[in-house]
Each structure stands twice: as C-alpha cells, then as structure tokens.
Amino acid sequence: MGSVRKMLVVVAMVGAGAGVGAALFALVTPGELQKQAMLKEMPEQNPQHRKEAARTQELVLATLQEAAATQENVAWRKNWMVGGSGRSA
Image 1 (cartoon, rainbow, N blue to C red):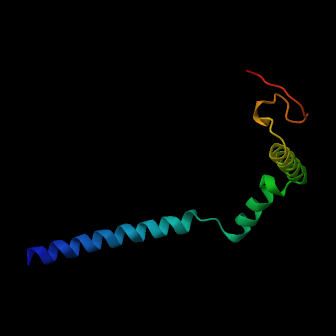
Image 2 (image 1 turned 180 degrees about the vertical axis):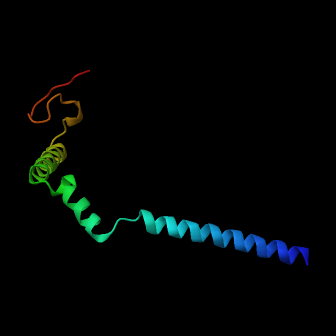
Image 3 (image 1 turned 60 degrees about the vertical axis):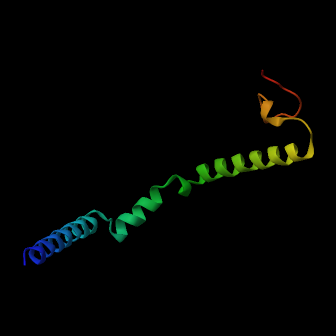
C-alpha cells in the first residue's frame, strides 16, 4: 500500500511540474503581433544588410572559384579582394 501511495505522489508531482512548465511556456511565448514585430526588426529584413550579405557571398564564391582554378594557396593572401601572391608568414 505504501508503494502505491508513493507512486501516486510521484506521478502527481511530475504532473504538477509539467503543468507549471506548460503554463510558464504559454505565458512566455510571444503572441502573433509580437512575432510579426520581431520579424520586422530582424537584420535580414534590412535592405542594406541584405546587400552586404549578398556582396560577401559573391566575394566568397569568387575566391572559391579562383582557388579551384589555380594552384596558389589563396588563404595566405592579406587582401582577398586582389589577385596575386601575398604571403604574410
């Protein structure tokens, strides 16, 4: 009888913990309007940030394409914007 009672108490405690966790999660989760406001404030929504990210991706892709086409170790370049040898060590 004692083990049944102990098991019921444990189940009740776990259920209460889960209930409190679910209630806190419901309170903390932002609403639909807050989600939309947060999405508008994200840096990816800024046109200038998108242009900078696209330019960075273009530079990385160009560097990778050049590295694939040549035997030079392009990782040693001081300025990746310019071609040619530029060892720093």
